[in-house]
Image (cartoon, rainbow over all chains, first blue to last red; front, side):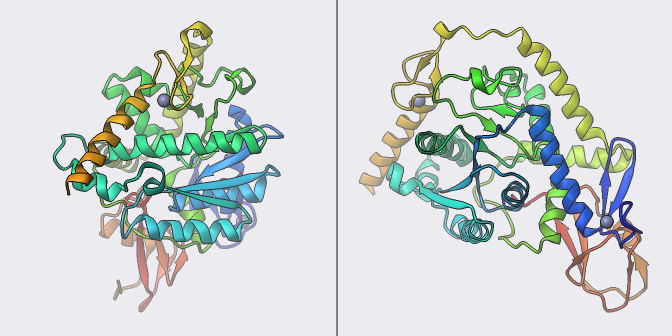
Length: 332
Length: 53
Ligand SMILES: [Zn+2]
Ligand SMILES: [Zn+2]
C-alpha cells in the first residue's frame, strides 16, 4: 500500500468522510497537524496573542498534542501537570511529561495535591473507602480546581491564557452519548470545543468572556484516539502503559467498546465525526438563543469562578472533602 | 508474538478478532499498514490504545 500523497510505503489508513486513505509516516504527521489546525480555525480556539496552557498528564494524547501545537503554532506555550499523589502511576507519567516538555521547548510546571490540599489521592482513596463515591469523582473535582487556580495565576503573567486539554474525537463522542443517555443537559453542553462554564460555550466569542475567565479549549477534538496513537508511535514517543489504578469509569468503557464495535462491524468510519458535527450544529443553534444575564452571575468567594450563589458547588464539595480527609488523617 | 505462516496484517487481525478501531499493529517496532505481509520470525506487537490515557 502506497501513500496517496507521495507514493512512499503507507503505515496508516486514515478515515475521511468518504473513504479511507493510506498515509506514509510523514503524511500521517501532516494529517494530524492539519486536523488540529482545522479545529483551531473552525472553533476559533486560539488568537494571535493567546498563551496556550496545556494540561499535560503525560499520556499519549497530551504528549502528542503538545508536539503538534509546538510544531505548528507561533504562540507562547506552557504546560502544567498535576501530581495527585498516586504511587506507581502519576510519578511515572510526570517523568515523561517533563522529558517531552523539555524536548519540545515548552515551560513545564508541576502542581501537587499534597502541597496544595495537605493530602494526596492515595490518602483520599484510603479514607474514602468508607464513603459511597468513587475516587475519580473526587480526583477530577480537586484536579480541575487546582488547574483553574494555576491558570488564573498564569493569566496575570501572560496574555490571554487558554487551557488546552487533549480530548480526542473519541472522548468527545463518548461524552455526548453518555450525557444524552443520562439526560444530563448541563454536562452535555460541556461537550463543545470551548468550555469552562457551561453558559460560555461556543457561539459566544472569547472576547465576551467575563474578566479573568479561563476558557478551556479542545484542539484535539477532530483527531481520533487511533490517529493520536499512530502519531505517538511514528514519532517514537514513549510513556507508561496502563491507566490509573483508581479508574472506575465502567460506564464510559462499556460505551466506548460498544461504539468501536459498531464502527468496526458496520464499517461506518465516519460515524464519530458525523455525531460530532451533528452535535455542534444543534449546540450552536441552542446557544444562539441563550443570552447570559450578567446579574445571574457572581464570583465564587473562594475560587472566583462564575457561580449563581455565594460559593460555587465545586468549592462546597472540596471543603467537605478537605474536612473529612483531614479529620481522618488526624485520627490515624 | 511469533507466527509460523506468512500472512498480511489484515488477515492476522481478522484471525485474532482484533478491532482495528481499538488497536494498531507494529512489526519489529514499526507501525504498518494492513496489507503489510508478516514474515516468519517477525516480532508483532498489538498496541491496544483504548486502555491508555
Ligand atoms: Zn506520503
Ligand atoms: Zn468556588
